[in-house]
Amino acid sequence: MLIVMKHGASDDEIAVVVQAIEKMGCRAEPIPWDQLTAIGLMGNDGRVDPGRLGCLPGVLRVISVTPPYRRVSREWRPDGTVIDLRNGVRIGARELVVMAGPCAVESEEQILNTARRVRAAGATVLRGGAFKPRTSPYAFQGLGEEGLRLLSLARAETGLAVVTEVLDRESVDAVAEHADILQIGARNMQNYSLLKAAGRAGRPVLLKRGMGATVEELLLAAEYVLVEGESRVILCERGVRGFDSHARNLLDLAAIPSVKELSHLPIIVDPSHGTGSRSKVPAMARAAVAAGADGVMIEVHPRPAEAVSDGAQSLTPDQFETLVGELRAIARAIGRDLADPVVAAAIGA
Image 1: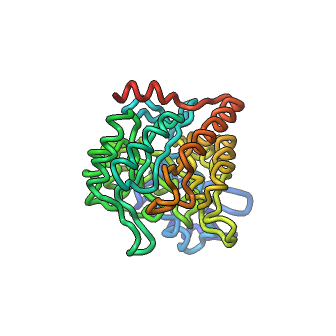
Image 2 (image 1 turned 30 degrees about the horizontal axis):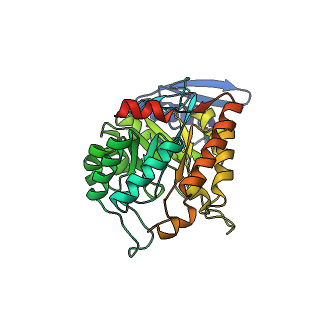
Image 3 (image 1 turned 60 degrees about the vertical axis):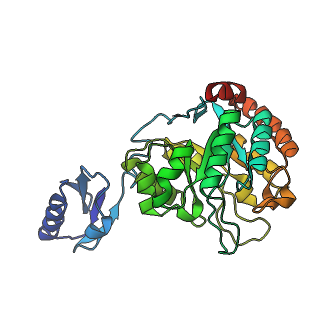
């Protein structure tokens, strides 16, 4: 951090800033700079609030030299993080991961049928909501613990890893008992007590970008999880709110290379929520892979017209199978590939 003093700042004003920095437990180093003086703040572990220094007499501005997120940054870890799941799938490696399944677990027949079909098509992770945060209190809220049991049943049969959402810190342990990955949804991206609890649960965390969040805010939310001890965090771009109604959200594909430059964490894309429209999902999934995403999360339902939630953005199993073939071709064109579901199922069995 660099504190730039105003032109003509007095020695007393500079001394006050130096004393304030030292009281924070850091080291201050005045740096003569043309007609100004800058003071370097050394030893900042991320806890120093720039506002405490910016309001001191004689201070012109405070410049952050290092990002406010430390553990998720490339400076902390230059190489990309690779996350190993219990079924042998690796997220962040050369092979891309395909997560697929229904928005919500509805019945044993529905989730088992979907799991079989998406695995056969090339998925290695099964997505499905047991607990559903809905905008309306009257909408389907999920099967709860019965949904978790059904997801475990699907994993046992297919070998797919399971990712499902956790809504509050009280249910973290119950979800972690059944899930391979804990999903923190867009509405909860800045639920800090939940982020802390998830960081202590001993499971990888999939963190979705909030509907109005910047990339920096997403990375800072991930920092909460890493601070608690869980380094296996997967970021997810799922669209932010825009002003145009042509799609449900504005899917920010530029976030993929931006995150890759700033952070060592893997990033996947959810084009289902990003567009809200079945017809747009394949195109944006293909674009996400071409842009360098480490995977995609696709909603698939055996009968989308009968889905209790998000049927309009869910692919049929046949449509999903076609899409996976296209994603594989694009991945290979840029020197990558898709994770092998056969190997994953054998390990998970």
